[in-house]
Length: 111
Length: 114
Image 1 (tube, each protein chain N blue to C red):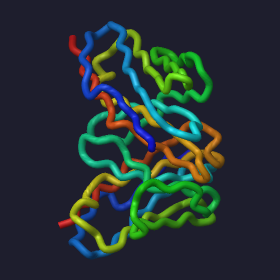
Image 2: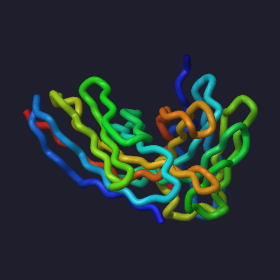
Image 3: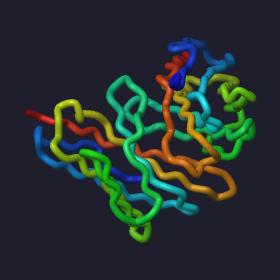
């Protein structure tokens, strides 16, 4: 089956760097996504990885290791507005597409 | 360029009824996915449509069905509603048949089943 694990909650300080880990098990891997979701709002796309390595996009970077079933999202220069849930999602293809989301990591940024 | 829109915003139904939720994809997008999100949980994948054909389905019973129209708007239909169907229903549109990356989510429909 498919499974995604990520920490439930994390707390970090404004201006710091935080790394949110995600481990997954799937067959037919077809890409890994990170989304940000503020309370009461829809998820917004942050990053996509399909090959091993680091993808950088401004203050956000995402890393993937397919052999280890592991990804992380790195947030630099944390701002208060980064307080949100961060969702790791894996897309697979086994005769049809599926996108499975983790339960999300709630990040609290404190002053 | 208009974003993804969903209607209605909120809906209250009773157990056993049927409901239709609607989604208008972002302009130019030909793929739509539907998700169910319970409070405090990640979205659960219901199904995906590409050019009016279902090309992916999650672990939801057949009473969850969908349609995608030639203009790429779509519907989610749920029959024989159960209390556990109460959730936020999200649609997300993207371009191509799953090979591209970014999904744009609509604001969701909050369904309450009494």
